[in-house]
Amino acid sequence: MEAAAKAGSEVVILIGDAPYYGPLGFRPTVPPTLLLPGPVDPRRILADPLVEGVEAKLVGMMRFRLIA
Image 1 (cartoon, one colour):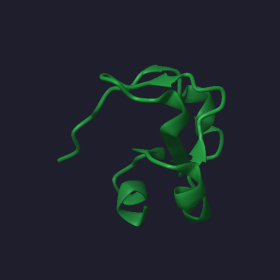
Image 2 (cartoon, rainbow, N blue to C red):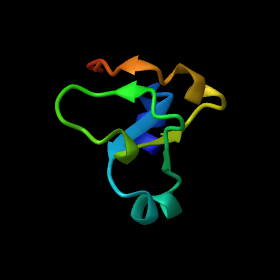
Image 3 (spheres, rainbow, N blue to C red):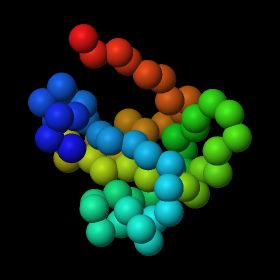
Image 4 (tube, rainbow, N blue to C red):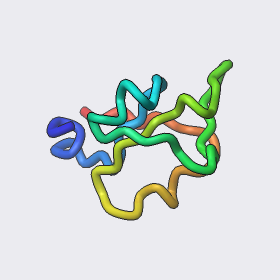
């Protein structure tokens, strides 16, 4: 989480089980508006925002940005 914040990320996304990752700060995207390519159960898309209010930006197909 610290490395992501230092790199300028606004949110950390993972695919997993909310009961397991919830204690670490990850929550399901509600409603599940964030999409990933491939077969992904939208209920398993979890986010831990690093910037307040970033959840409103989690809409549409997820794109990846490489950080050098």
